[in-house]
Image 1: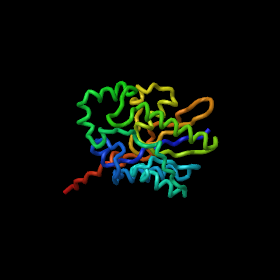
Image 2 (image 1 turned 90 degrees about the vertical axis):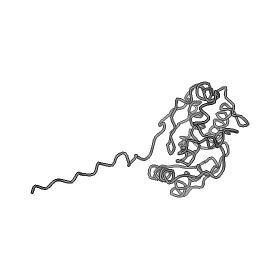
Image 3 (image 1 turned 45 degrees about the horizontal axis):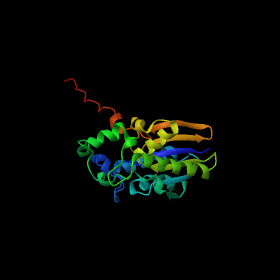
Image 4 (image 1 turned 120 degrees about the horizontal axis):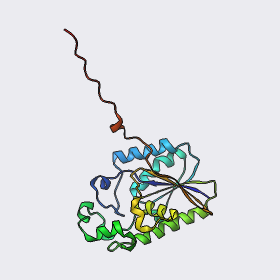
Length: 217
């Protein structure tokens, strides 16, 4: 059965500001996000990828485009890979939302939470699993498939295939620009990689500048 490369989009301005983007249109990658998309190319340009699917939002499509160009593959927009419909929470700051009592439900009992005027977390997980199952049946066992999506939907689908209760899905970490690898077979599922970051943080790895030596008089 296929191997899925589950990629979270690169950094956007909403990620920097810690705002809930949801499905708002017009949210693009930052310069750092574009670099993260290019790092995926550097890592995956020689991988035998057979298909690329993406959430139709700008930030996910922009993440997928450099890789698609390098591999000479088309991107298939897949609405089932969309971000959770956060309803009235879209556009709000996470700092503000943390003051709501509902925030603790999202973190501690997400299986019970339904976004106001949006969808429930359980509905999002069901949608994502149906998308992966549809792709699994569409592709052969030798296929390597890229799916570019968003943090919570990726965590929810991984939780499902690992047999992790939905209330525990927030224990998984999916950073911007990261890749998780899931192998799904008829006999079970195996998580090959979780939250793999293709590039180092070069700013943190730069060697210190050498100090000037004092010359003897």
